[in-house]
Image 1 (cartoon, one colour):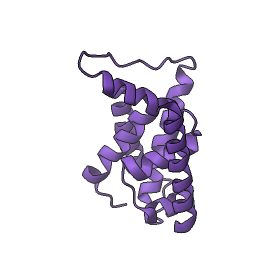
Image 2: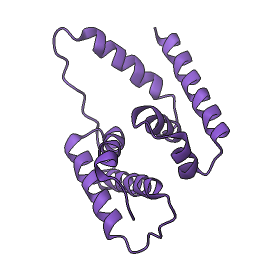
Image 3: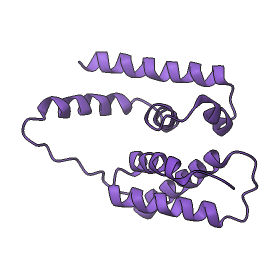
Length: 150
């Protein structure tokens, strides 16, 4: 099981933060993800350590939400001078709300964490063409939603 921790740590953290929307919780989940990855006796080296890491992180995020079923997401404080940024974020959040969790996750992995198409193909068990087409449809859906909101 060889994996470059430094390279993947930030990606797993961003993934967790996107899911739980809390810095400390995301840090805890990220650390727990790597602990479970390295302590795992059930993982068989199939050449897909990245997929296994994201699976662990996804499951830990789900467990976190099960602990507090009515967990409210905290709104960031609005500072003076950032009105446009706040408006853009709200428009993007509203557009993102039209996506399914699976679509959000795929978009996050590819465009925020910059996971390669090859790794995404392994993770999702789909062809490169199918993933490219799916991502194009998701981006088109977001663009239409954003243009409707503005």
